[in-house]
Length: 544
Image (cartoon, rainbow, N blue to C red; front, top):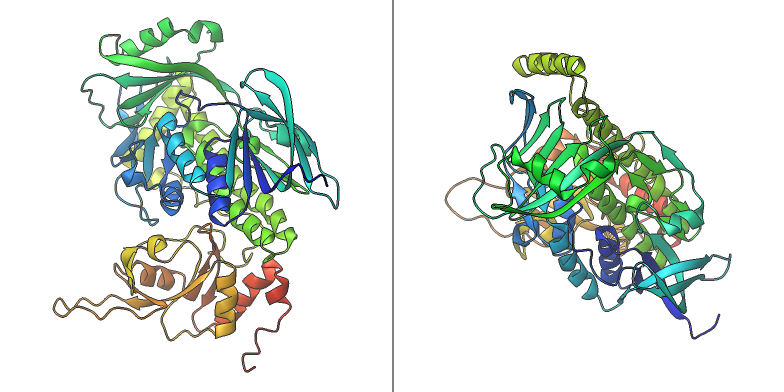
């Protein structure tokens, strides 16, 4: 291989939030990362505007706490569905804190958030962010590093100046028209779901009251969504009606006409952006071919009705990053990367299905069908027993997790704990990956503890919080945490488990039942990784 080529461990193609997160996580692990982005500067207009409590936990873990970012505001109120008469069809409670330790939902300004994510990536000394360079060719020959040819561009036109670099792996986080996906050659599973909506992002000049701040207007004359758009901003989404042309709807004059019904005018607001989007539902059937992988919009698109598009992409990055880290460090077999697509596809499809189901209720323009929907939803509102049960929480598909464990593939909780080093949310004081033991009496030999530490899993035992109200409890010893709120004790009791093994992406790998064998849980995890240093060693023999 020609030594003049720049050499990296991972090339991340695309530098939106998914590429930024992936670069940061791999850089923190010490890997050499090249980020290749064809646009020389940040896109200055709003796009994604919502993320959930699980993504808040992801941001917490890279040092961008949602409660400390000027780009983000929490949502702590109801989310209303209303009919054409402004009558409540459904009230969804988005107040309070979820079991992850964060609010149900957050709204943000992407032009403000991306520079904050960029700063975290650039803090990593092994990350090279290369803007204004577009990947134009990929050579992936067995036994050789992947070769990328990149060409300078202003984002629209290429200049003809080319460079070549090599890398061990390539991740395409390069959007819906992904070049990396085209190189992989994977077909797309398209559900044929197409609706056009005019999205209008507004900066309000004065005080406006929206009660509640987020609601869905299910009016067949014009289905409309209105939500916060980040600090000082709001977003309206207006569905294109069957008789309307996209070009007629996508005019700023038309946007002002539609906003006027909400008392939003030239004299009290500024339109930051208006654009017609075609909401789609599709996913790539293959997420990996050899050393090439895809993530985010390159791998899936979904309608925005559940607010999960960017969330899904950031979950992709979390799932892939810790597996890539272990493979690059020789701590896991390369076949572990095959579990990335299988786990994430199932999870993504659940959110796509849910988003489409919401869309079927929202995008009704026939008055008779809307009246039937309204009558049904009003009956369910007045008598909750008539309402269908909420969908179960999405879980990861087949991969590393135990198939027969009901907790496997679900997200773990996060609550305040106290350790010998201090008090805080679990991830702040322990980290994302952990084997959580029900009590210090649940033993695990030192060899397995070292093996888990080697792959990023801390071993901690839960001590219950005492409520004597008088003398302060003695500080926990190393390797134990005080369960300040009782959340972990309750969770373990709910799972009837002596231990829960939580992966670095916060997903539950599996549990050890009460009175069961914790070593079997640990050995199963290490064996699933295919780590030759652990799986080939008879860990059960602890006398040596």
